Length: 120
Image (cartoon, rainbow, N blue to C red; front, side):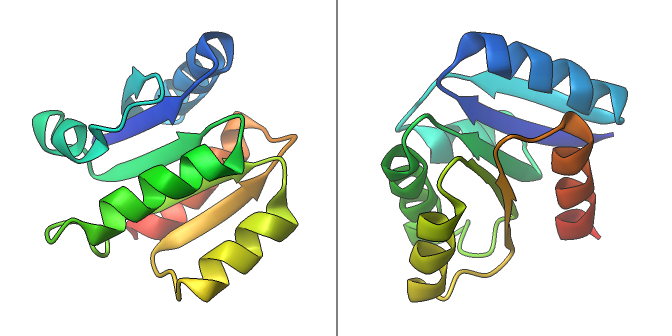
């Protein structure tokens, strides 16, 4: 079973998404917005990261933190965003690799599919 770290700043959404991803066959560790994301990736032995923050700036900050970590430069990341145009432009400017964007509104199956694609 693949271990996923879910960072979501809305507890109700985190709970629903956790259930959906577990139903899709992932082991999920959910956490609120947390600047210690790299330590969580290591401590939870995560194989991918899902970022769903109310503000894209919050997801962007966590994304940059992960990408600047020497061991996580190509770590698989799914970003859920309600401003996909801004997110796409931001990711392009960073030449982001091994990252997929899921626009809001979203379903758990869309996020699971993105994770499967990144983890293949």
